[in-house]
Image 1 (cartoon, rainbow, N blue to C red):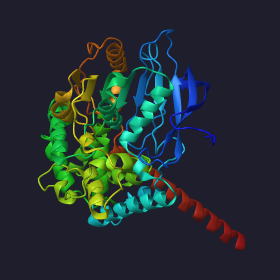
Image 2 (tube, rainbow, N blue to C red):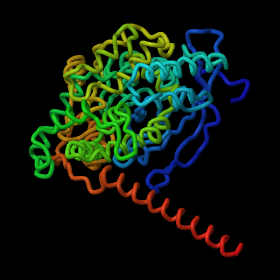
Image 3 (cartoon, rainbow, N blue to C red):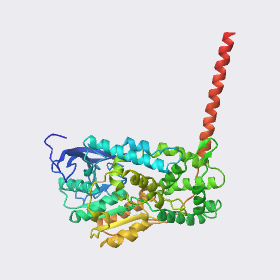
Image 4 (tube, helix red, strand yellow):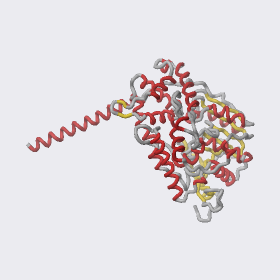
Length: 492
């Protein structure tokens, strides 16, 4: 970033190539300079990457700004272009704190999320994670990072600055999961800048936290689908009760391999977001009730390899912890005794916030913590088995506030990977039609019943892994025996 750069300036913009699925598209690449904290007149400038993929048509309609999910994920990769790039520029602006000159890396949190002792959800483990949050925030502040500048309204200001820099009169928004919260606040702050908005897997205010009764309702929904599936129903009379029994009576080990029940529960919730991984989880629980907890042991071990590296933790904390009120008793409320699974993710995060004070969340108007009415043309898209952003919240809380809105719920679709990739042609057609005309055409979607079949589930993988390990140990022992015998013969 040159010394003479000014706030809101798009510098170094030049032609580049954006590649997606092996196809190269003409694009512009540059850097947007923005204030780190717009409420501080003495603030420094930070730099954000910008990519604009050029529409294939000579006279395209309004551009589409993309807001990725997360928080903690980059905003510099589009999920797809076919059906949209023909008539719209596609614009990506890096998320502050994740992309660009300041990245809120938190190795303290990545290490602390592994927990201490034998239960990730114990008070000791959650306090340890809370201390990791505090340590990271203090280190970043000591390095000169103004954490008050890392909020969703500031992200919206970045997007609005990019719109002005490109001289667009109006823009469309395409958002997913966490990105829908950004799009929602954009519509409240700058409705005159927007043409249409599509929000996929919607996250209204308050829903970065998951409530146990909602998680349980989703499990019961899947349990009803299990009854309709010959393979699943042959293994259990009630999938919800199977999950409850295993969750509340989890074995401490499989053979000599310990099982951390907190890690299994946390990873269970995480993997239930999409239908492919949810089937794998259900298979592990069904096997455990049948007396084979090997799949749970593998989940317990896999946690330390999957979760610590799954996100940019500081960005996740800055943007995602705003719904975690430290005044709530998260330990009790997120793990009620009669719940099927509880809400292990919110228990971990909420208890850490409660015990340590949590991340110093940037100030944000109270109005943005509640749903506000908007006249922006909006299409909400949800999956009926989405544990991450359950459709009930969009239906009950957000849809009534949309003066020009419609909500499509796709049966037996989960989170964003399902909605975008499961019947991709139907998804692209619906989005393109809406952006181009304002009409909602979901006619290409067909019903596909939830498939509970798992080819190579966690129990099988665990046993294969154990066999390979034993074979390797046996081979090493045989080699050692051979070497010792050879040396003995040489000595003789």
